[in-house]
Amino acid sequence: MNGISIGEVVLDSDTVRLDVGSVAELTARGVKLTLTRAGVYDIEALLKARGESRSIGIASVIGSKIASILDEPERAQTAAMGVRGAKSENELDWMSGDTAELMETGKGHLTNSRFDDALEIFEEAYDFADISEETEVLFYLGYTNALTGNLRMALIYLSDADPDSEAEFFIDFILLKGQILTETFAYDEAIDWFATYSADLSGNQIAAQLALLLQGVSYKGLDNVAQARNALQQAINMDASSDAGRAAQGVLKDL
Image 1 (cartoon, helix red, strand yellow):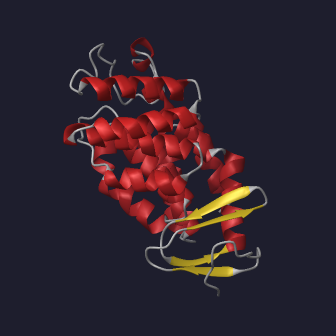
Image 2 (cartoon, rainbow, N blue to C red; image 1 turned 180 degrees about the horizontal axis):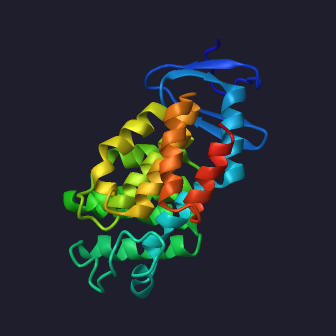
């Protein structure tokens, strides 16, 4: 078992230990593995888990639902996420003028996949934001970093955010942070995260199904087959024909 240093080469067969407060980003076979929590990790097992998630398309299943937050008002009413009502034309009126304008610009960049530009704008918005505005800006900073593959920074921003349950992006926040915890192999924390917010998700079938999918993946990562089967089967029972339902079936087949 090895500690790892910046720039050090590790083999697929290596096992590495990450200390509390440390972060590691490993690149292998064209895949970046991000570790943000203390623990002992088997590189080959991590690569296998990431490959399985990619083949089933779990990240895209979650991401496509979260992306609906950028929909126009008329689309938001029927968006697949199904967790928000139509946006108000004055949605950002509560924000200060500079912050509101910057947020709108940043969201426009996201819609056009101009992620670096969006990050720059959201960082500027954070400088202008007052306390009541910071959480929304932090969410979008986390979301944009996740889109660029910078999961370490995404998790930092999301960990600093504490949205009110009435916030339009509240469910997206729960799902996004849970997905990133799962993708960074913080399986125990992902399971606890979704358990904490189970009541908030229970009123929305799509969000609850996605949470069960990620819980199933996390239990699988911990080699807890019984709990993984239970969570995945619950997700399938909700709607076997949905993207999340099909993804859950794919994970279940591998148990």
